[in-house]
Image 1 (tube, rainbow, N blue to C red):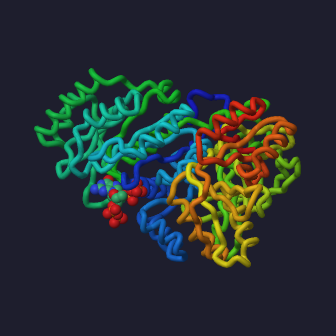
Image 2 (image 1 turned 180 degrees about the vertical axis):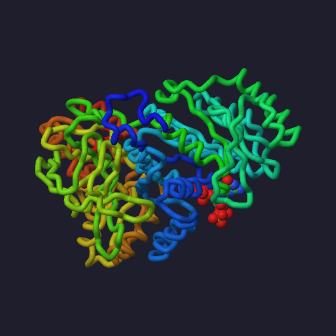
Image 3 (image 1 turned 135 degrees about the vertical axis):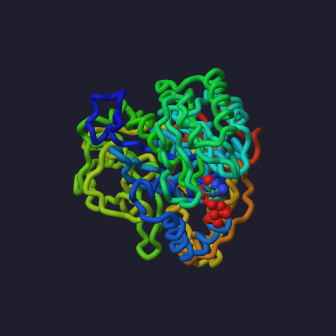
Length: 534
Ligand code: G4P
């Protein structure tokens, strides 16, 4: 049996056994395949292929989803819970495309660790690097899985060097591959002195595991060709000399990443990685909040919304707020305080996401992710507590990098368009600014693809044709200051002023010169490109 929280014997066992993590990778490295194998070994699905099959059944329902499929990206994040040995894993899915970095950033505020999947032939790719940087901002522990070892891949030392150099993190091998491509037969488990042999005939079978007493054990020679054994001995010896040994504390602090080699499609190396997540995971971590930090073991329940998804089921027009439980033991039907509005809300039908099904959540513990269906009360960044006025911090909103004007295809439907845009703004899918002067809405996004996604969702979910046209503005900044200073600023700059969907004042421009001028002429006004969600 594994030790659920070696560092925290004081944690309630239900919390100590939780591992909440995300997978970060470049498209095509194997995230979907690995997720599927996690679910398979976690007993959440019976047969590999179900995740994709279900995904496709769902996707065919809409052009928007079709677009997602065509482009091979995953636009929306969701959460999945499953058990592995004594552990409860909560896997939060991150959108894979760089256009959705803001959404991804917020998703990563809801996890305690990340699994980085890289393709053994390609090494560290651009999107992996970007996501890694986000994890680093939060010092998240990172476990690495080097996938597709059944194909021709790079030399193991080269892969490790590249990670160390590009990502500036120490790498320690948790396993060592034996052969590669056609000759790949398995791995030597460096942490447990075991030989793991891959079964190429059955892709869903767990590898055969053979106990070995060190590299000189003659059992190695019984199971492997002589050349492979000689090479393995040599390489592992070199690795032990040149690479740092596993230091659990350094992993926890995000300075070191253990790397496992395997082949997700062949189910190989997956269980070892899962054991790694269980052991080095870590357990739910304290959450930064104002005016005080929240500890997971606190008896009272607190949680925060890191994602809102509207119209998950187009038939029901529902909205689901994804809540990361920060502390306590939640039970269905509990009355919680919605801190932003100071109103009580009874959470009577929370959902838990098991594979791609939803299920009523009777209870949840710190570390879990539950979905709360609601009619728009819950927004990204909101905190729910048992009464205390706590506000979770660190969930930012970024100024959009691209602005366009949205116009309803049918001018009679302008009001409907406003409603649809506001919903997407609350979901965090775009920024929507209503200019103080003139008509229409200015929509801001981080990546150009988001305009296409928005247009197809508005058409599909609201039946509204919409056009996005170039805007005269290219930058947006939130304006902060005392009420009097803001009033004077608005009066003198009306043609540049808009309000976002929270009613906050935004300064729009196309020139950096304008921003510099405001900073010079209005010392009482501060223009910012990030806003803390609250
Ligand atoms: P992603 O979510 O990171 O984008 O990757 P995904 O799992 O969809 O995998 C991308 C492709 O790589 C898929 O092939 C998948 O079958 C393949 N793949 C995943 N793991 C391995 C592995 O360990 N070895 C090998 N050789 N291939 C692997 P595809 O042809 O794009 O899709 P499909 O037709 O197989 O579904």
